Image (spheres, rainbow, N blue to C red):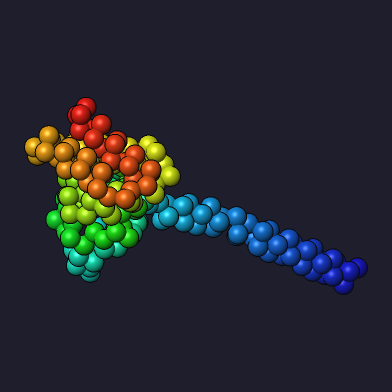
Length: 203
């Protein structure tokens, strides 16, 4: 009678331990999967990527600007302002200070970075776009003509017109009309110039 009881108890113990182990193994992956997915989504935010460059202490200001210029496309400045605790204007001022680093290959990224600009930030962006236009009219017009998003194109054109509005507007329009006539421009480029003149006429 004694031996069967021992065997029976041993069998119960083995079954109990096996069930507990398999239960632990099944629960482990579930507990760690969700946080990892959330972290990846946050890290891939354009606003967060740009801010991580802006606050990088090991990088020079010039390197920050060069890297940020390649990351700006599609940024939402409201989101950036929230993530950065109000650093939108300071970030745009950094870009303006180092605007000589902005090359034609950066124009598209910069021109697709107008979402939710307002107040002083919109003025700072206008200063950047306006200075680029003054320095490289042909390159900026070409980049704007190549944009497929008409709303973005018009937003940048309005920003440029706002900046040019601080100059002698009649002279600016005369120069644009002359440039449009003299240059062998295609229809998309002519439309950009026409839109810019219209924006100057209706500030």
